[in-house]
Image (cartoon, rainbow, N blue to C red; front, side, top):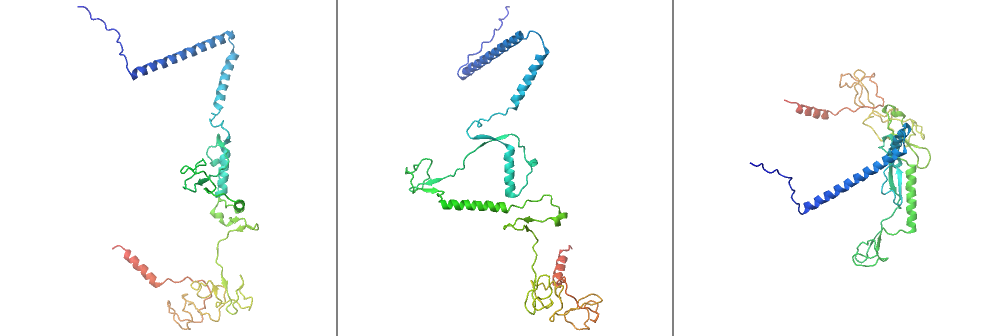
Length: 351
C-alpha cells in the first residue's frame, strides 16, 4: 500500500473586514521598528570604527577619563529641575517655598498669637510658581429696563438695550469723601492692632511658679503697662454717727474721730458670716452681747441673763463665760435639711 501524502503547511485563511486592517497596521509598525534598529546599529558601528582609527594604541588615561565624563554628564542631567510649561509665561516667577511658609507663620502669629517654629514646618524644599496680578474689583451692572445682568459687552443680553448711566452699578461708585473716610478707618484699625497686640501664650508655664507670672498689656494712652489682677470685692464702711465713709485701712472717722464699731454699717453686709460684728470693730451701743460657755464652748443665745443653763452641759452662765469678740462664724446646718437628707438615705437602702 502506498503511504499517505505528507500534509503540507497550512494555508492561513484570508482575513476580511476590520481584522485585515489591524493585521496590516501591525506589519507596518514592525517594519518601522526593524528599520530604526538597523539604522542605530549602523551608526554605532561607524562611531566605534572611527574611534578605533583615531586611537591606535591602548592607553589607561583616556579609558579613565571617559567614564568620569559620562558620570558628570549624568549628574548634571539629574540635578537639572524639570522646567514647567507655565514658567515661560509673562509675569510668572519662581518663589522659594521657605519664604511662603515664613510669611504664613508670620501672619498666623500676628492674628492668633501663635509661635510656629521652623522645625515644626513641613518640608519646604523646592520652589513654587507665582503670578503677580493687580487687585481687581468685580463690578456688576443691571439693566434698568428688564433687570438683567450685563455680560462683558455693553449690550443687554435680554432686551438689547445699550448700557447707560441709569443702569444700576454694584457696588456703587464711591465719592472722594467716602474714599478718604475708608482710608482713615483702615489706618485706625491697623494702629489699634499694632498697639493692642495679642497676648502670646507661654507654653513653659509652671503651676509651681505661678506667683511670679505677671500678665501685662500695653496701655492705650501710652503710659504704664496694664497688669492683670484678680477681681476683688470693694468693702465700704460708713460711720453711724456722721455718715462719713471710712478711708481705706483706717479705723477712725476722719470727720468726727469716732472709732469704728459694730454699729457702723458695712457695704455689702454679711451678717450670716459675721453675726457678732466684723473683725477689728469695737462693740457699739446697740450691739447684742453673745457669751460662750467656758466649759463646753457652746454659745449662749444673744442677750441672755446670768444663770441661764447651757444647752449642752447644763452649766449656768457665770462671770467666767466670756463675751464673744467679732469673728467669722460658720453657720450651723438646718435640722430640717438634715432630716430630709437622712430620709433619702434610708429610702435608698436595699432591703
